[in-house]
Amino acid sequence: MKMLCSIYKSILKEGMYLYVEKNQALNHIPEPLLKTFGQPKYTFDLLLHPERKLARVDVMEVIETIKSQGFYLQMPPGDEDKLALGE
Image (cartoon, rainbow, N blue to C red; front, side, top):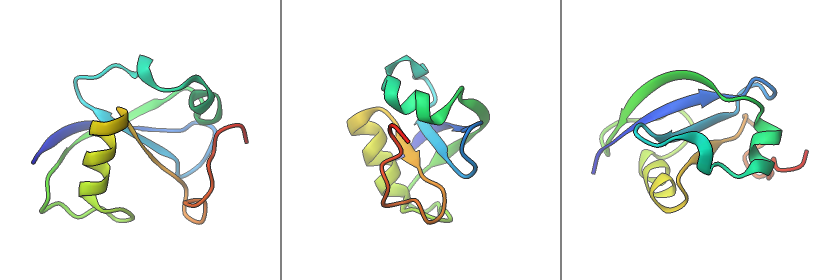
C-alpha cells in the first residue's frame, strides 16, 4: 500500500504537522483543529509505503488514519497523548 501525501506544518505550534492525501483539499479538516493548528503551511510531499521509516510514528498508522479520517495529525514531542483541540 502506497500513498502520496502532502505535509503541512503549524504556524502556531512548533512540531505539529498535518498529513493529508496529496489530491485532497484541506476543507475537510475540522474547524476546531484548524483553530489550534493555525493556517497550514505547506512543507513538502512524501510517498508513504511500508518500507519507509518515519522518525516518530509508524508509517502504516499514518496511512490508515488518513484513509479513515482524511488526515493525520502529528503532535509535538511530549504532546502525543494530548488532544490539541481547544488549547
